[in-house]
Amino acid sequence: MHPHFLARLAPVVRLLALTFLLAGVGCRATAPPAVPPRAAAGPALAPALAAALVGPAGPAGRPVADSPAFARTFTHHTAEVAGTRLHYVVGGQGEVVVLLHGWPETWYAWAKVMPGLARHYTVLAVDLPGLGDSAPPADGAYDTQATAALLHALVGQLGYRRVRLVGHDVGMWVAYAYAAQYGPDVQQLVMLEALLPGLSAPASPTKASNTKTWQFAFNSLDDLPEELVQGKERLYLNWLFQHQAVQLDSVGPAAIDRYVAAYTPAARLHAGFEYYRAADADKVNDAAQNQVFARHQLTMPVLAYGGEAALGPALLQNLRGLATDVRGGVVPDCGHFIPEEQPYFLTRQLLAFFAGQLLPAPARPLLATARDVDHVGITVPDLDQAIAFFTQVIGAELLWSKPVAHDPTGHTFPRTLQISPRSTLRLAMVRCGPGLNVELLEYHAPHQRRSIPANSDVDVSHLCFFVEDMAAAAAYLTAHGCRMLAGPSTNHGPNEGERYQYFLTPWGMSLEILYRPAPLPYERTTRARVYGPAPAWH
Image (cartoon, rainbow, N blue to C red; front, side):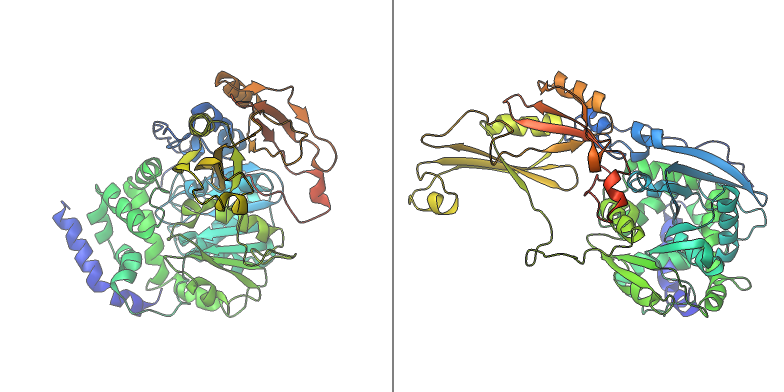
């Protein structure tokens, strides 16, 4: 944290402090954080099927960490390290990934990312000392060198040694100090959305930059932040999330409730500010420590991302001289809170990076300028019935629909669609989960075959939904008018262990549900991986 940078922010700090005034202005962690009341499910996702879908997803409005699948995978624990009680959440299998959250958050910031990682790795999400359900450091030290030493001791105490380390915001500051001090114990390092105190050049403040960074100067003031924010934690945190995120619904009421509860106790609120005070303190401070660390480049691979509407490419540019192998870029459609705003993007990037891959550079022939699969089209006998099924049973979201289309010239349909010019067409687009658009089409044409084709017929396709609980999904579908075919069956060979079962929609179309364990046998012979599943349905 450059002192000139703080000085330039002083006017806006004084203004915001005045705003708060005019508005009225050693704990022991023994249990997991309190779970806020669950919000009512939105109409876009049917509750029972949503509970069975992959990742932490439940119905719209249901917190990720409250899903049964999340609870089956992750457990809460505390450990006494150097006289400090640290709280952590752990789950999964394989090599260890340590997740370090930022301010004003807790381990919960990673909840949308953790299930996707846990299918391949042991995931360890820690509450930083003094925050969440971790006690303040016994020695009162909040500088990142001391914090990293505590976390390194925790990792060793849990029986781990060499880890992959991921840090966001203040957690990124700590992750850098950890990697700089204990390089041989860090296999790979991921740094998200922060600039390192003492190692980044100050920027001239603007209205836009002040909105994103004014809290650095405010939080580092002695005593005043506690006086102004105490009793107004929700006002303060809401403002930060609303003005520094792009995906405004990504940190919803349930998450805000958690964070407000986590930072309302005076000791927790004070601890959060102490991390900022340590960045540029008079004596021991992060800036001076980082300047010493920077004398030796990091040798482990480093992945760095800034949010498109936040740091952008600045983080990657700032890190290029600090490590021998730095890659990364910009997270699209994202503000500061990457793990919560773009968890699907982040999970994909982390898994690829951990596997030694670079995204999105293709290693094989690629359709010119292609970026993604846009949609899958399905012809249905009754468009209204299909829309109702996908939105009310599957949990898709209706994006748009069009009225009946004709071909008045008699030339367009034959040339563009290879259908009779006397045909009519209605269509709609629905979105299933985070990444699949499904176009539903209802045709009426002379000599049209109206019977449902068999799965063995040429040009027949189907959709398959990844679920966590096959029995629950099958029972739900049956209750909603679907006919389950025999099963579930188990695959053998390279995808051995996958369980699947087909079912028929009310109009007879074949769809499928599937559960895929990890890892699969084919993963022993290639770094390529089956796409998905997503961390969350929404």
